Image (cartoon, rainbow, N blue to C red; front, side):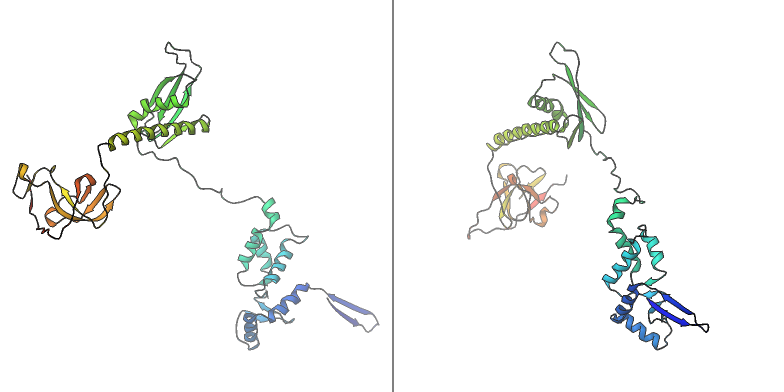
Length: 336
């Protein structure tokens, strides 16, 4: 606060008081510690034409606005005074920027104001959100194949039939809207329902990707679990029976194997037919493993028209010996 006292000719005293915010003095002191603003001040003192000038109080101004240095504490104090003071009503970022830009300027001013207002706890609690709704639209899944995704429900409360059935289990395909109506009893266990699903639905349409039901989610999940266990048990039995007549053999990349050609048709092997024709040709090197039971072979040019990936049952391990002399074999493919 500055005070001026003037004595008039008639002996009266005229006092003039001038008040200004205290942080203006802080801004002036902070300007001295900012190298960029000091460089601008030197340009102004050198009478270089620019948008910066020095006012009568010694402040560095930018287009008649006080230049605020990049001092986080000082900028926060100005923002709090404008946004949270007793006479303010917590203005939004746009109004607050329009009010402050009449008096102050600093780099990234609009961004700093927007971030300060967005962090205000009172504004986050009270102010209505004038924005578009959050969350993108989740469209309905476009189905690709029939009976991949099914829905199911039970129609209960029916009269008891001669076969002791009083409910209907409805299983609907979501793509074609075709349905199966299976008569059941309300007291059927999950194991019984799983057996019915396998015999009536799974047998015809395969395993679905998803099952939707409006009943208790825990009951639906338990039913799916039982169905999976039944399928796994059936697959395990099938594998155990099939493996009794098979042997386990594994090949690695770099191994050399013979290729079984006896089941090939329209192939003349070395000009011989029938029992005198060779059962295996090669050996050929395995260049890549394709899954667990298939291999990629490095075939010669004569076999370039044959797919070079073979199942493990088509291969036979080659047992090398220094005495072996392997000559390239001629394989003629009958194109007729």
